[in-house]
Length: 442
Image 1 (spheres, rainbow, N blue to C red):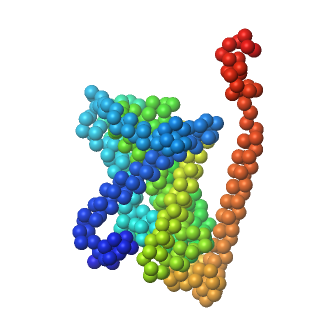
Image 2: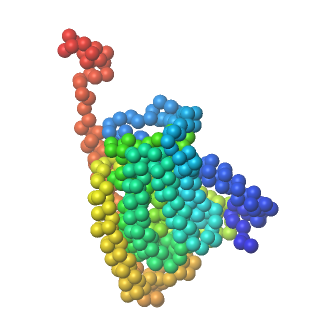
Image 3: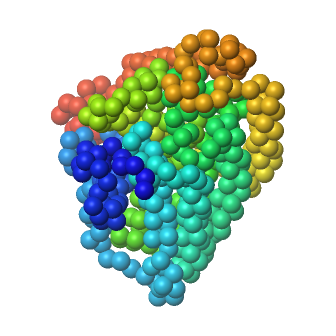
């Protein structure tokens, strides 16, 4: 029997008396009712705000404070709308497709390590492989949705998704394999602990190839999530709504929720594999996680949870930024970018990462448990100084890039806000309103 988790020690002072009931309540209440739905509704509201900001609009601002209740209101509206099924559709497959799309994305939350002790199954040795296997089921729901609708626009969108997702899964898997080679395990919790020594121990800074692999993963995840500029399966300017054209009401909401939950899932995978998981840049969480005080560990886990979700929301914001910035390419250009660009590049990264680890060995073990990540003697005594210098150099480059980006965004925000002018002088005055309505006031 596995030892009790932190929550079990705090709630039951040991293992629960009914583990199956405990697991069911955790899944039904914590993951389904709170986590998945809250993340989806918040991301829907946030994207509407981001797109409005980029288009000089207000976005949702009527229902609730700053429009925060707009997403629950839309969800209630979809739940109350009539659920229509086309006469010529395959009714069984038409009903099944939304669940095959949403359930795999939701199940992936069970293997994501949100904090050192906030993971549903910490002993899942092949957690990463399990998540990838579950996510591969999502494409079946999309293909069934297009095929069962008996609509040419829906079929076009489903076939596009099949081509796109199957193609981009190859560079996506190769980039994940590079991170697994560097970590030496498929357990997401163990991968997170390997990065608890500080910024220079994060996997993306282990060598230049893992850093490039994180970029490949991000691009491939956009295609897997059908996010712009890879939103060809549902491109409204060509296919009405693509594979879910014929869906309405609550079934349409399942596709909508699945997309935004999938955005969080792939961001969480990338954060866990490359960007330190729940760990802070100084490694303080990993240093204090060896405490034996359960209440202190609970507070530490809450801080780690905030860090983890903040990193995920940052990646989600970048996905939204790209959606409302870049144009949509053609399907042949999308497949060309995968087969002729990302796939050979991923193979080169895989080979380079293997040779790098062979020629420049890294310091083995877990930071703070097997060695002190901030003490130079730990690296000098094991003859891994070149690996340390590489990690420090890449970490400094990342900090410099972040500072330049923040400076650029701040400058664009300040100068852009000053350059905004009203279309008419005194546009808010009653006289100006009458002047726009009646020509005699001009």
